[in-house]
Image (cartoon, rainbow over all chains, first blue to last red; front, side, top):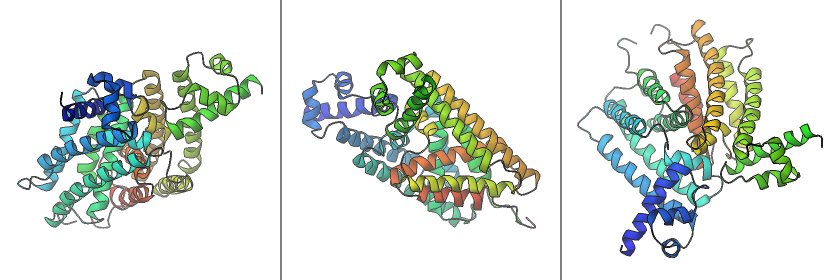
Length: 200
Length: 200
């Protein structure tokens, strides 16, 4: 493997382990063993150790999430609320296939690590902000088209949706069913973002 | 200390540590050191080790949460939606005092441990269910009084509220501000649970 390939392999295995085991339970040894590289390689690429490494893993995860949003959420040929629904439905299917495990790396590390590492907290905050900004764009579009009553700002709605989704993922993990995710869709699209009633 | 006092002290210190550090980062040694008791005491009271111990800590946390709900949420002398709001506002103040750290033990352990321990997962599930059931009672009361339009079931609304709150706590931890909690209150009470409009 070239240096770049070794580094990529470490970050990819780190992502897999952090999603499965969490931050504290993932040791550097487990990461290098999974990547099949000597421990020295890890500290060559990540001299700051596990904390800096986890920040890179968050970057990889956030970059992937950004691509999914670009594809499913920001395709302006479809009506905004329809895109928003497809976007969340895509992830319901993703977690069904995974057996309702793992959840969202951003939420998991917010719970476990954001009080302990300022570096990781700042990366999580940035990844959430980018996500919120994309969802707010779609909500604003729905309001501009008159599909949604502008009772509170698009940013408030976007943050509320993302937080509701993150909480539903926690409940999914504790129930090991898709009930919380389905209820998120029902309450979000039948109540919170329900279309304006004619004459109301 | 008597045996019962030692056991209680271990569980109390365990709660403090699990909230601050998470599950994997909290060793048995840290718990016995914090409680000032020999390590043998821990295994005397918790022969199943850390996993069984954590289940007891969840019980203590859930019992406290149940008392708070009884006091703030289920006092039938006040209108249901007013109680629901006071209940969440009580916790906004709690987390403000804590510096937006820790969050909810149930959510944190759902994120970190529910894929790894079936025993802990089941305790978390039970604690969430009891919480959902209390909140659903208040939502049902609001619907019966006509304060809230019965568009979806009280149980769906209750679960959505709790998950939204849990997600807002994750965002609070990654932002270290109360913005996500305040927005949860705004969107919940001005949109999701907004009173029926006259004539609508």
